[in-house]
Length: 300
Image 1 (cartoon, rainbow, N blue to C red):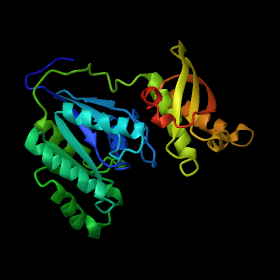
Image 2: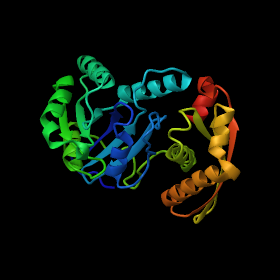
Image 3: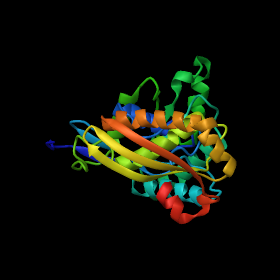
Image 4: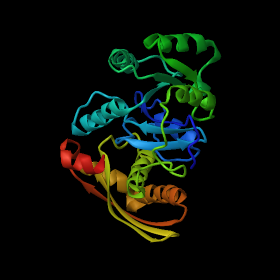
């Protein structure tokens, strides 16, 4: 693309507590799915880019794992990823679920951002997400409470689900983006490989069907990803669980649950790559894999 004078470009670290709607917000801005979504916390485990380019600017959104107190190597890995994104970002987009009362996690994030403001002065925009769920009578009290956590920040009521006010939020971010040439070509929307996306989508499908039955200890290894042609990809994945009983739950009676998981994942991957997908899924037990740094790095 051409670079007219005054073009802006920068990295935006998207942070917030689990389930605030960070991934949904990025997907809504891009107009298509690049990040997996689940009501279960810790769905996002690695930094994932969502690239949105206009004639005047390029927004490089870094979707970070929800900030949690780490209890294992996986949790520490996720926290490091979020902190690294903050270090490198030009702008911080703090996504808060405005439909829920301010939590201890929100207060902690606000405290850390206030501390950082004195160190690097990075601008912050607060996206008060899920405004479509907010009762009219709660608007002032909720927005005032969130604003009090970081009074210096710009803010906007938005809805990733309906797309409300996303254009105004982007204008707020654009106003503080640095002037520079674009980092990526204007037809790129993510740097995540289809191999990684396939693993994430399979994990998303497990969480979709088994949010209550299977805890966070699910990982996915891609054993094979082969583009047979523009119209067909052959993929083989192994779903990793930490306990033997979880293996039985994921497989289901006569393989019924694994078939459901595979069918949903196959549809999602096919929609992303724009062609048919042949997907084979297996399940195995790896006790304590979330404390194995090598496995965490390969599967997170």
